[in-house]
Length: 293
Image (cartoon, rainbow, N blue to C red):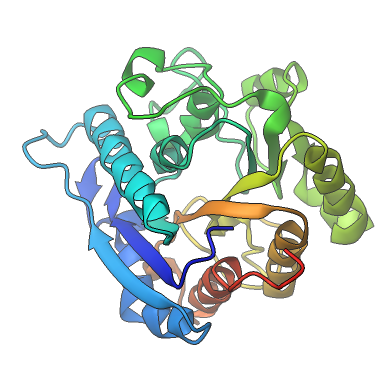
């Protein structure tokens, strides 16, 4: 982990190219509900910046990749001054910018998500680029647009863990089965527990990389036990204690180079439990490294 004294919180409050609607309202809701105070309780200084795609028409694809370009620069600058980059975004495809800024060379990805995010323009039936975020990350689609993001390199599939997934289309399942991505599905976690399933996958990945980007789509949480993070939430998934344990397991094994929290629509979070889980996740991800690391 970048273990300076500071955390740079990078806000990208956009969903499908529009600011502050649906999941685009999540980043500022987290910020307005004690996110900075939680991070400072770790002994961290906190700097918050907002990225804005100036002059871009509100077309989903154009805005998505402009946000990636802006986020990449912010993440790179944060790393250069020893700040930990924490990106709060509406959509998961912002991860392309975060990974590009952190540097894909020697990097692994742990992608927590109820959904596979592995559609392409040829397989999608919705046209929503947010369900293509992981596919873009490993170089399966939108390659010309992704190449415009500073520092972008396709991630090797073998360096990716997809965790907590329980909703994938037939096309996504087929493409995942033909890939080298390791899937630690939600059903497997519930059946065998995190220590056995995620622990083994992390130990295997540790033989390949030492640095990790952690992507946390909050709909990885169980909407029944915790609450729905957004309109796309599906049954099953992790509880708050699972999430904290999983992040701790990652940090015991890897240097966390950057993290992203995405896809939180507070209008679905009547009890505020998803908010609390997000704050715990952010605090655990950005805690100072132990002396052993």
